Image (cartoon, rainbow, N blue to C red):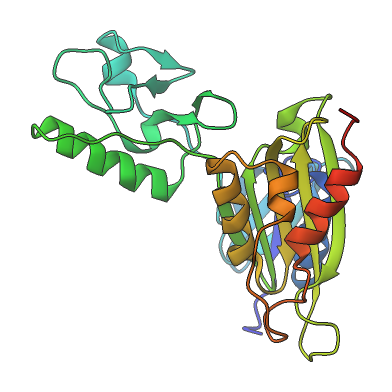
Length: 278
């Protein structure tokens, strides 16, 4: 719409690897709808061009040169914890290991935010998930305790939501790849609103669960209502609900917002049918 031609070079073989391939495939299609997408491609050089810069890309078919006005690099993040690690703080691949009060184990030293591995409620162990809500909450806990007050951080389930053009994508808990080969997945595609109500869109729901029914994670993709529903799944993980209990939730219904059986409920009901017999 702005008249800007964009080329996206992705070093991996798919986009948005924080969700499983069925959902990242939807993201890839959405990206290709609006830009040129080059997978397994990296920027290897920037050179002066005739009217700006020449970006040199290397991909499966060799090198390619593109005349560009600007290059935006997104290379990821890592914990900046060198000072405390050198002082003897415990860490996991650079992410500091802390108590639920944010104490590091060093005398009078607390740590919070993106440099910390938070307690993951599904894994029941530390996980480095650098996201804003946990960083904010752990900062409050660290500040309160350091000032002599009482506070504890309950933990995370790794909930995140992003908007890719017109597509909303979200995840919470574990993906299939993170959960391991024993985990089951249940996929459904359902309408975001009552079928007869105008304006609805298909919504993809994936539940990751154990054969016995324990919920391990969930992912959603659609053009509306994704953020609301991922928060339902995040709440279910915090409450340690199984797919059977998830299927019985009394969720809101009105034709402009959801069908009688919400996509979350339909996915949970289908997951029940894939459980191993007791």
